[in-house]
Length: 291
Image 1 (tube, rainbow, N blue to C red):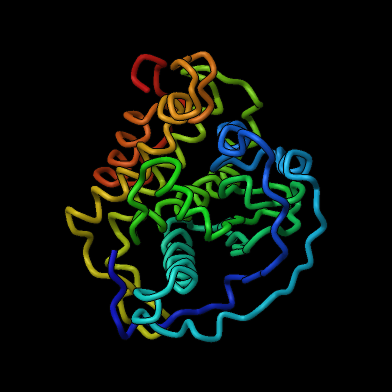
Image 2 (image 1 turned 90 degrees about the vertical axis):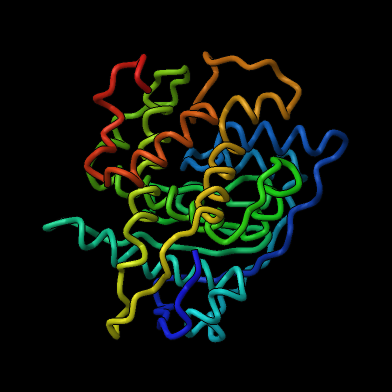
């Protein structure tokens, strides 16, 4: 989606960290990343220490910096980090409006290389994730290049914001208590799959209403979503489907090992949220055959 040029960005809701990169994985690096990604991409599961093991476990220095150059929607349209900051502002305003009480905003950390989280080390070998331990979302913005090169996604602006909105969906599931009810089970109708599809649905719900969400000055953050932008987001959802990841890592498609849902399911639940809103996102009450 395109931000309105005059929208104001509250960057206080985002941290920007720059750390040293871990060493590259030796022989078969793509497979190593895919295995880790398959297990923990888009989910706050503490597999991040494994990334340090397979990458050599190099130490990384870290420095927190302000997003001083991110002030308006025009900035968000030009820069990935500013886009994430602006989307964070919009998502926070939107979800706050969906709760009568009990809403709390998550932390959002944009990092490069590696950083520490309440769920272990977040590194460039692991995809974006939500950590319930510190109620924060961690996004290595280089992941968008990985979506393009390794998963076949176009990773345009709305696709990038879909990734953030999906992780925000996990935070909403944490607030409602549904996240804590899910273990590390796998399977086509497992709790893990239901949780991921719910996050996709919540992401779609935000996209539907994003063009009406206003900044602190009463200006709308975004313009209405176009068909091309919607196709871009759906492309990203399909790229991180379990079946696509399994095939790209040289495996056969095995629904018993699903932890996030198929490409078709992820697209469909995103569209469900977009068409029907967040109240349609109770994937835990849906029969297995209807997931």
